[in-house]
View 1: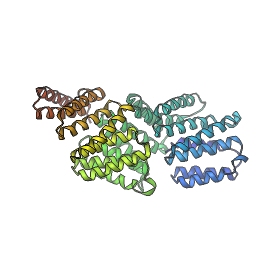
View 2: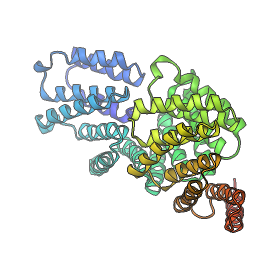
View 3: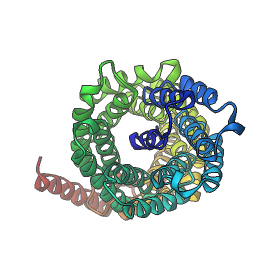
Length: 438
């Protein structure tokens, strides 16, 4: 969804006499803010229908708003085409009719669409350039900068640059907070992104804290429950699950999933996350059939949203392959997991994502009694978790424990060594959590 400032900039750029064109564009902007995207597109097309009679700056605004609407709807390729047309018309416009804020907003809108298509490196470069441009603009540009910082946090996080992503998310949160209570929803979204960054880095305690902060900030806008609030509930549920409180997690995930079952929400990034989280929570309860069903739906939704060979699909395929192996459907599970492994390796998803797939492959081969393959993948998963999270992280400890149990089962002489390493890692991770405090 386009950030609040993108639409504010378009509204700011619509200057001049309050004619019918300006009125319809204002109504279109209001419709986007209310997520009535079909009406917004109709109004924009009505305002811009006789485009050839419009001056270049109005043509630019028509295509730019169409791009934001299409991007919010998940139609990223046509959105980029509209942004490209907007850019060409802005270039034809006299400088005094070309607000620099609108040009920066165009770059951010284009970057959001590219990020959603998996073109992360391009998106990051555009966002960094836009941020530099905004910082050089005269006057108070706090909202512009906050939005760009927010999108940079999401993009660098997706690229695995978690340290930078954390810094950007914290800076965005502080910027939104300083703008006042009218931006509490934007603050909630920046806290949500921070929670996801901490979760990806394995810092589940801080992930829970950020998710709770996001939920508290968004709650007042959630009557009736909104898509944005439901997305926060998904991350809060995941944080509870990962901190060992699945009983608090499952009702939240189910509540969120009800929102995403409505026809207008059948295709969204938040729906993908809700399906995955609900599937993992059913897995925690050993309800394998329901878990597999939800994860298969999540994979299908992710393919539609992000593409067949996206990292997002691969992460869910790793979960689905694990469930299939627990159902003793080894051929199907192995096929899904190998596709996931190929994707995370080729897309450079990072050692944590790759380690999770290796661990699930190891567990599949263990159940299938293919012991040499299982040992290879257990060892690889441990190495990757150590690289991603460190020796003394709880997820590293869990991978070591699985490896140790396997080695004991096959009576390997290495079993005792790995068991001791697992015990030390588990104790160290618990000590670290205790020292970190509540």
